[in-house]
Length: 125
Image (cartoon, rainbow, N blue to C red; front, side, top):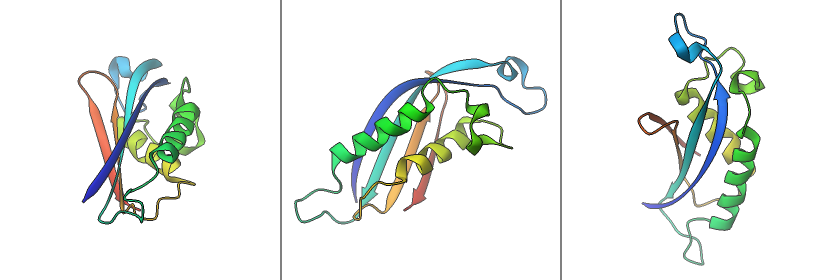
C-alpha cells in the first residue's frame, strides 16, 4: 500500500452542544492541524499515487473554508455536536469533492485540536 500525506494548520471556533458540556459549551477556538492521508495499491503510469500539488490545492481550499469559522454555524454541522470526530469526517468529505485521484482507494483525515487530543476518520473512496 502506498500513502501520500499532506498537512496544514488553521484556527476555527466551536462550542459543544451536549448536556453539561462544561467550559467547552462556551464559544472557543482551537488551533487545528489537519493531516490528510491518501492510500492506494497501485501507482499511475508516472510512478505517483496522486498529484501532490493537486492534493495541496484541495487541502488549502478545505482549510480556507473552515479557517476562522464557527463550526456550529456551518450547514454541514446542523443537528450535530461539533466534535472533533464529526469534524474529521466532514473535513474529509469536503476535501475529497473534486479531487481527481483514480489510484487512491482510501482517505484518512486526522484532526488534532490541541497538543493532547485528536481524532481521525478513514473511509474508502
